[in-house]
Amino acid sequence: MSDALLTHPHVARDGQEPDGAVMETRNLHAWYGSLHVLRGIDLSIASCRITAVIGPSGCGKSTFLRCLNRMHELVPGARVAGQVLLRGADVYAPGVDPVGIRRRIGMVFQRPNPFPTMSILDNVVAGLRLAGVCDRRRLAEVAERALRQAALWDEVKDRLQKPAAALSGGQQQRLCIARALAVKPEVLLLDEPCSSLDPLSTARIEDLMEDLKREYTLVIVTHNLQQAARVSDFTALLLNGQLVEFGPTEAVFTRPRDRRTEDYITGRFG
Picture 1 (tube, rainbow, N blue to C red):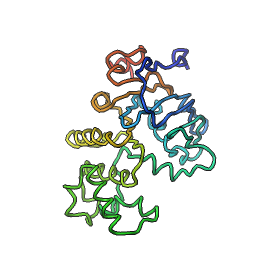
Picture 2 (cartoon, rainbow, N blue to C red):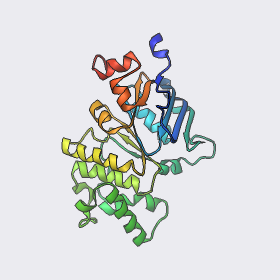
Picture 3 (cartoon, rainbow, N blue to C red):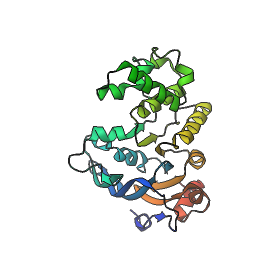
Picture 4 (cartoon, rainbow, N blue to C red):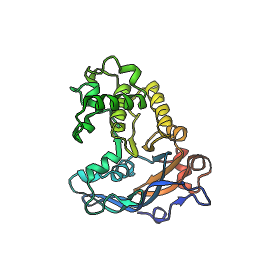
């Protein structure tokens, strides 16, 4: 690894860091077997804001996201070192229930992954049922709330018992967002949520993210620099598993402090 990649990241200072951080990573490292994927990531995630994580393919973006809610450890041979703090408490501390962490830190994946043979309603409340909620009225109320939050209620309210597979790709992605919201997470992670969608569906998801940040903290991984510039409040650039630059999105895109950030944003590499 070059000396340049061992330099400290350019993290915004002088009041430009996120206020009211709900999550922090401290010296976060991650491996797949012997492959060292993340190298000492220190990052604060602001409450009720959208933080975008950008960088070229293979730089560790999705791995970083999966470390936040302990999904990384589900991969055989994967391991993590350092700390991930949720409201000051380490999610990797001994005795912490990873399933409970994944309820508090929800995740939506690159490709919509509804349970295809289950109804729209059952998809939304699947997490609640796993948690032992059986009351039909309660489940129906939560499903309506989550579908409204995901801007999907008006499109599906008359066919809640229909299979989720009958929905379009964009609707399926919003259904997956509703499923994550049903358990009232504190943080919502979105891993390339629009990469398989058409422009109209992408615009709807972006509008939805803007609405959701009124109540939720969002972290989005995206390869689409225009999307990061449009929707995020803060942006982090990863290169070769290291944090190169982090700060308010406008500053990162228009006044980058690191030459590598400028090169990546302008397309000179990556």
